Image 1 (cartoon, rainbow, N blue to C red):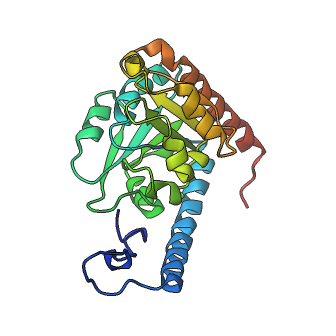
Image 2 (image 1 turned 90 degrees about the vertical axis):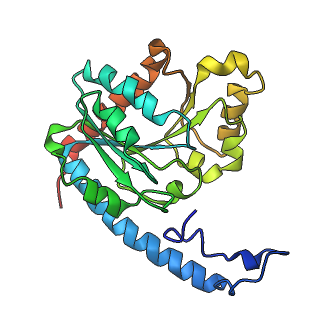
Length: 256
């Protein structure tokens, strides 16, 4: 958690039994700070979205807890999409290291690492800065691998076209119920690491999807394992369809 997104504004002193700390900001102060923060972020996100739309780039924001398999999925998925002539790039967010960006670069796709330090999410301004070395005219799909966190990333519009929420079978099938904002805002939920299901019978993909439906979400839910390439075919089709829909809408869109 961090102060940048407002999630650190509530002091431990606000909790019963906590050690004495300086007084926490009152509710009105917290709301005002958050509203100001989100408003500024949304302005930049709108600018990002306009740039992406101008170039016809499908932008997919991948969100999950740490270790759900975002990077490995991209390592396998990007070459599959390249076989269909789709040019990909990735912006990677992590608190420290450029490990994930270097892994993705080995696929041949451009990868830009954003090291956030203590910030628990990416924001629109970070994405705008990371775009500078990329030629959007040479891209079809831009993946944004958000910081591993099921809370704060869901609150920040980056200018993306679609959001994908990943839930690994190692985490528990009730995560959509526990972290509703992220999963409710997702355009697609992926249940990842399905090759481990035989070792984790306590995880039920059906229960995970039921939790998603309880959020009034109609987003598709796919169960896959990046270890088994054939299981990624529905995801490939979903991405290709989303890109085609974007191109169709783009032909009807006229800049203001």
